Length: 287
Image 1 (cartoon, rainbow, N blue to C red):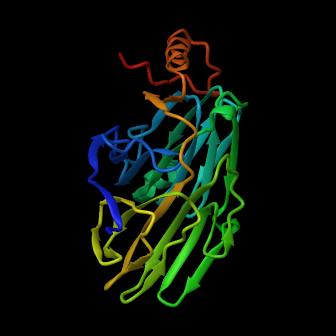
Image 2 (cartoon, rainbow, N blue to C red; image 1 turned 120 degrees about the vertical axis):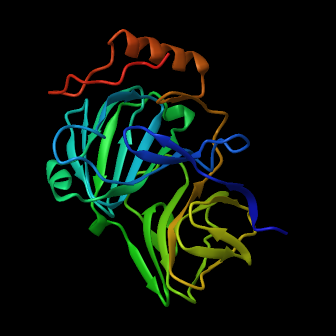
Image 3 (spheres, one colour; image 1 turned 30 degrees about the vertical axis):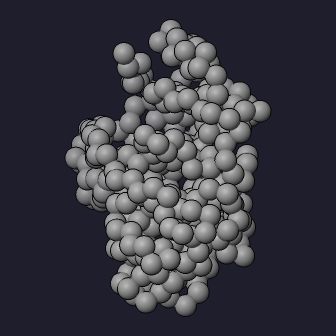
């Protein structure tokens, strides 16, 4: 039986910098609670000005998960949070009933010409938590468990796997791990969650003998068990329990009820969301 259920190629978009969008796609709207995946950069930004900054915008019904490989970003939100995001850390922003945030390139990153690269993912909140109070959590890289095993290394970002447990808050069974393999290395894939996917950011690997190349997202079968690399490769493994019902996406909003999406659009257009203190730029509602 095949180890790979579906192969997904990225769709490139320019949002002020290049992103490769991998979820959602036709035929695969979610993997566990993950309903959105963007690979950002690597992007370089002009030394002066705000080109490439993501102006303040709203979310509901989800939690954003930001993980950088290079550079840094500055997060600000309507709760008053100001947090620099650096490589290896996890930023978890719980939108719940509504939050507004911006993501800007720090001045020192611009001045030094440092590339910014990383992944942003959205977790759909369980139906019971969709309208929870918004919150923000930051987990420095040093707080996230790591494993070195032969020619394989793993940083466990969310969940329990590989004999490790991440401190990152979860609302449902969730798995998110960053891994690296040296040439000749292998990694046994955890069977701790019902749905799993693998995104390869560098190199080439095989999953139970089936080849996966850089830039490809593959949704794994329940039987998929072993990751192997002939040369250096790295990527992420993610998934979790199946969602507790369908989810609908509209712009930056996620909900199990389409009426809630319509209300969020109306609220943003009417200026009813709390905004980020000290910022006056915002992304208008797309028509």
